[in-house]
Image (tube, rainbow, N blue to C red; front, side, top):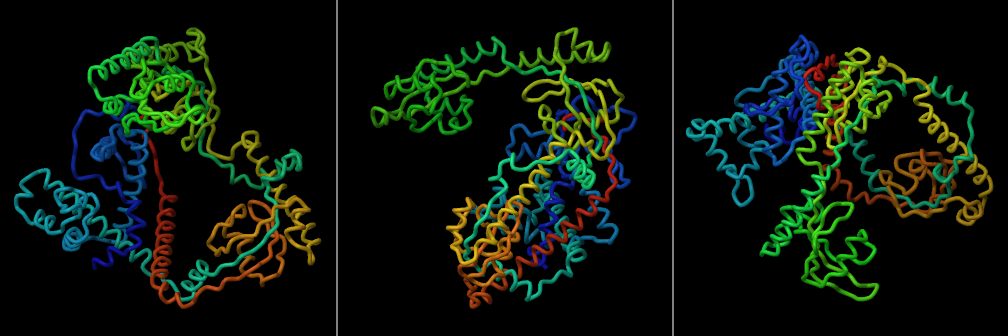
Length: 608
């Protein structure tokens, strides 16, 4: 049975779906507030409804807290709350769908099955616990002793480890059983194995002439506005989008103040004094430097010559003698101290080996707190007198977001875009948002328009359509050029005629059906024709997404059939795994697409 679990492709395909979707058994308590001060908005306590299953704010918030703590335990100093909110919401959807399927098909995992898998194939999280390792390898004897010792269950932390391991094992048993239901009947035939083997091992070498659309100037193709409209009307499904909102916004950039500048300057002088008093330059660079590329190496920049660094940095470095340290100096990157280790070469070939400590000039806590008060005061004024009036009164320039969707990306908000959009989709025109805090600045928005889900207006996608039509016309032009070229080839040298016609000419290295052909691509009409033509025969004009070509097969390299039997078993396993994976993913994707999901996260969280 263990072999089944270990080789079950469906487990591999499903674990990325299930991983993280079951709420951890360990409950953590600490003071983090993920709701961004919006918790409890509205009359309902539901954060969402998934296929009729109600998800309370408390349930989701606890799952979010667990995920946050797991991130911290993995060594992430500042977990991305926005990402976790998205991640755990998708995990809940997956968990709900998965649980429905288990219940529908009455799939269960017995304690005996769970114990067997837990003892013989514990999850990576357990295998990586130092207590269970001997000479950097997982020690089953230690783990079994841990599971069988009564003292384990008298200790709360140890007991939680066992419960977690058993829970993961139960998930694996359930997914394995679901595998047999969904993909257990998948088979791979000998014909399929041989075809796949030939695709990897049979090769050809060709010469070809062609032209890519990227080589054709835009001025060579023209189109009427009516053609763009015809393309739009024929492909409206390509331009469908979710509900969208439009807003005015004001920005409060997090720019450093003179006080922040003075702090960085004073700090760099303090660090230099510490070095003069015996402090180790490399150790202090590792501790203080804001240059992520060199700080972990003790500020080591290696050797560099002239013309590699900004002027102030270069002038300082080449003026110092080896073993000496500079006074603090300023560049556009911040405040530096530079120490030259050694020089080599001379004249134009002179190079310097140096270390440096960089302190960036960034807004301090006082600056950010003051900015927060200004932004909140603006929001209060905007809510009372109107967004435009508040902006005009305070002399702040308001800008327009254009239409954005929950699934879209507004550069200033990044992965917090969905929170704003979902909130505004439920709001009235003129509604003013809370303050959005990002790394670059603080922002406030006012809803100016919203649009129901549907096909995007032609004007919004015109440039996109123009690019598509232009590409299609370039492909047609490339085809026409190659058709004219093809008619002139005859017995002429393909290379000479291609060069005379100003077409690309290439003679390839041997390639298989699975290989990428430079400039041409892979798995397209070009590679298909290369394996069908007899040696020496010229192809018809072949059009790919990149351009148009004609080719001639120079050599066919047959596969060494004696190695087929050696490769057969491995390849058969790979094909079976891929087919089961594809089926599992298609099955789950269909369930996910049909899921009825009501998302109210924006009532409680703005950070997503």
